[in-house]
Image 1 (cartoon, helix red, strand yellow):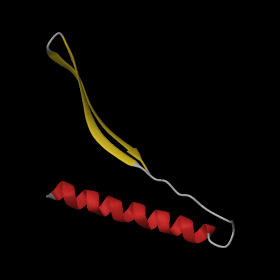
Image 2: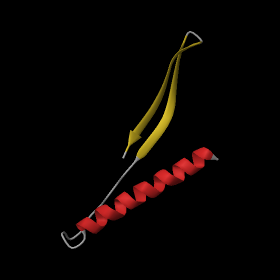
Image 3: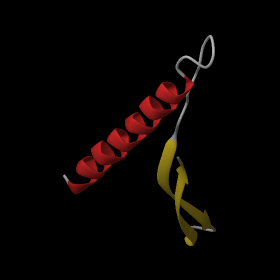
Image 4: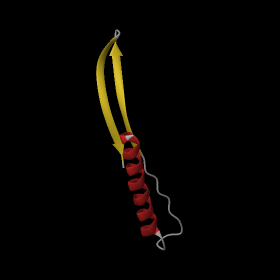
Length: 61
């Protein structure tokens, strides 16, 4: 469940960032669009049936 809690916390942070950006743009333009993304994962590569590389990645906001 720890992972779910972390995802929910990150979602809240991203939603607040979007809300803040839209508030800052409000009244200063005819329209605004905000997009954010956050990606986390593990990449495992093999060679000749043996694990060659394991990478953790975390990209985004």
